[in-house]
Length: 48
Image (tube, rainbow, N blue to C red):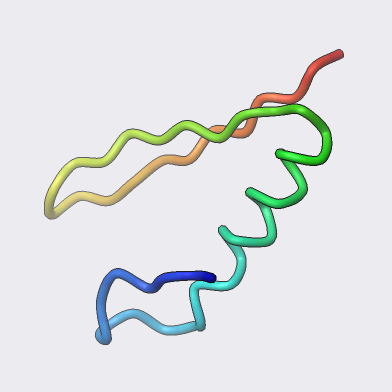
């Protein structure tokens, strides 16, 4: 149902799952950019 990429991070990984479910219900999209060793940026786009 949800996934945490590493045991070194804190939290359950549930936040992104909840955001995806909300975006799906609102007919939006989630995209991301990730760079190894630097981090990730997630963008949520919703229709007007």
